[in-house]
Length: 248
Image (tube, rainbow, N blue to C red):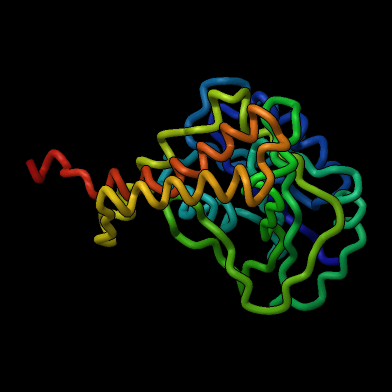
């Protein structure tokens, strides 16, 4: 079997990192952790699991993940975030996957949680992510936020799930730092939106998640997830459309 390098970027990731790295045991030939200045126990946890740990200032999510990938010893890359845990089915699938076509890549379903509660409806579900690929044919986009790997060959589905523990509680769902990054990207690209366009986008995103995607079945959490959809659809554009200090 072709060896797989697990690649993770981190910043103060001690909350879930031990569980994440435990799920990689017996699955990958190596673990590479690229940190951007943690002050908690992230480094100690990574080194306890035998990971290769290096530090680099954060340059945006796409560039940071690309940099982490270049540190790997093997061409087959399994990319995880520091709050994503492979379930047992995914672990078994990775141990038996046939990595023969270097142009192929594999997606896996991510199951998003708020605290320990899984969000089963709304625009978060289903959430498919490409996480296994050969770096000789696939690269991360260099987007500062919402980076992705775009398939250039056959796209397969890996059995099992990624358990994503990305949100501590309901208040953690809306993270303004991502929207500020997105706003800067939109401003650079010249994307703008007026008041009515923003209002329409917000209303549609909220309704789509809560009603059409049945987010109401997740109760209060479904409402907040739908609200995050509205914010995600508008905040970056609103920031890009708002005069910057240099323009005032």
